[in-house]
Length: 291
Figure 1 (cartoon, rainbow, N blue to C red):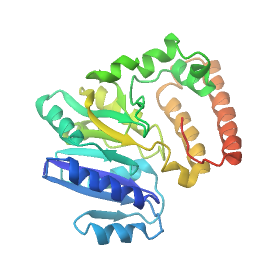
Figure 2 (figure 1 turned 45 degrees about the vertical axis):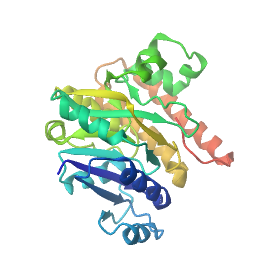
Figure 3 (figure 1 turned 135 degrees about the vertical axis):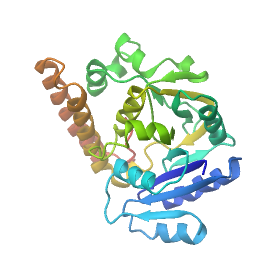
Figure 4 (figure 1 turned 60 degrees about the vertical axis):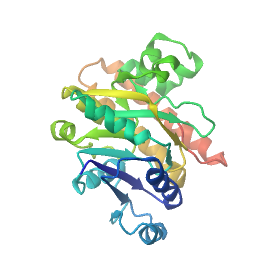
């Protein structure tokens, strides 16, 4: 089989229906399977999906096991040469999936690819980035990139606006729309299940990159992403898990390599940021979680 499409669901069945319809309507490659991994939504949505799409494979987890674990369960159940990871709040534009497949077909060095991710208003989400070093993580954690939007620390991380209009290599892509070769997964391993939510895509892409594969951003492949729509279902936990994942990521790659003062500064800043987000979220009517 050419392609396995893996969608992790948590109380987002209404969005998945739109996503699946966009896949069927906008994709020429028909040698594919769709696998939905449900993290115990327990809301009746999965029954609706099964009735509407009887040919789709559904894996129902006994609890909310997190994004990385759910993706890995989908990978284990899949048969495709390529695996496309999708968030449920994505709409595929015509040809988007075919562009990624062709790119991976044509380049044996490419291990993963992703496309242009648009907000509903047409603006671009900064989805293709460099691997974050400790200074980047500290700047973002403290919000310094918003106070100083054009600085040498985070400019190299987010890439320039011009980059998002052309094909280019990146070090990591968002897993909301990410296609990976199975052979790259065989070498780099699956997602690290210690990440419950967030940062697992950065870690995964980094390991794919370090396994000798290239990762490509392709602007001719376009999708629309209602960012934060899925995390709004449990926004408080999403905020907590984001900050836990960021700290685990730091410990995994940087704890033994950098001065303790920098590590403590990052940890303190991360904790302050977490509680600030929780307070703001408590008083906010819009529970979407955006970073």
